[in-house]
Length: 221
Image 1 (cartoon, helix red, strand yellow):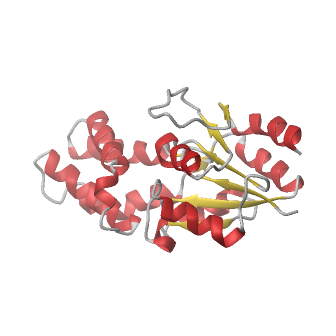
Image 2: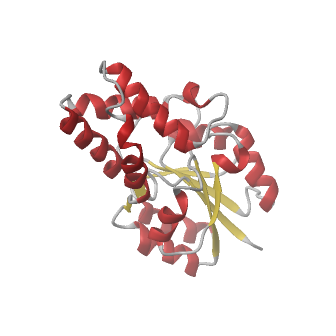
């Protein structure tokens, strides 16, 4: 029987801090409060209302920078750094334990599938950084951002995912664990920040780092 692991990318495998550090650095160069700009950038990025109707992630990022200009009463100050911000996203690095753990998943004969709220202008370099083969699905492919069940159902149908052959692994509670619960997908919440659930949905398992998943997979084998 084929075995599948589906993954969220950012926050689960790659550390988004580099992107937010870049936004903070830009803000300081412009002459506004870096911490405030960082928080506002993250808030806009996480607000699903900014993704409807569907827009590609590149445009979402540009709109985020335009919104920062508006928020700080500026004109074309943040937005002109659009190219640099996209490159910071491409340059994100894995968490320390990730590559070694992914290699072990592959050695256990799991097929790895990435499900990312990203676009094809960004994700290839992110995947290359992870050093193992992935099938990749982006919001651009399905014109839907997680937690939209359309994204999850498209992947489920393509691979014939079942509770017996598949586990979903993600850091995002609202974006991944809640929809996984709605579809009865077995899931592992990589809760790096020890967050509390904000909904009734619960993962099948909860860990703090990716390498803590290995004993779970071996126990279920």
